[in-house]
Image 1 (cartoon, rainbow, N blue to C red):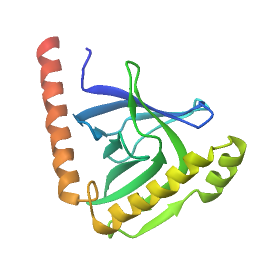
Image 2 (image 1 turned 90 degrees about the vertical axis):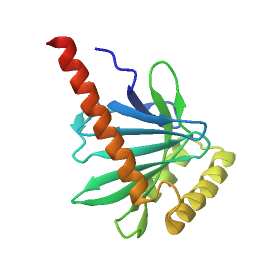
Image 3 (image 1 turned 135 degrees about the vertical axis):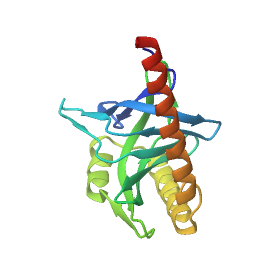
Length: 184
């Protein structure tokens, strides 16, 4: 059965090659600034065709006006964050889409953070010829993201993330109940 809350998420590289596909995200909220989605044990397909399933449930904040997205991951009764420097999210009839710009920030439960994949960024900016304007935007947006982390601004607030995850669980329960009614 078709569900308007379910969507596929596509990640591309700057050269327009498909990087990764999340097969099933549940849209929880969409407004002028952000699309909030969640998943649990969803299939992820890599560009080479290999696939895996997410191990932990997550709530993702896909920004429409910022060059990053934030994934809040539930693991061992804590929330960790994984942030991708990326183009703003785009929504079309096919999927939610963004360009992954390599740099990531990993944030632990105590809000200590580490910048990841600097070498991949340096390599890809040369290979894919990132324009200077994009490089400047990414540096400014990384600083904005770090400021959000350090000041615990949205979405780096555990109670907000838990609220969205509970909304996801309730929505999934409703979907299962409706599917059971249809097929019983």
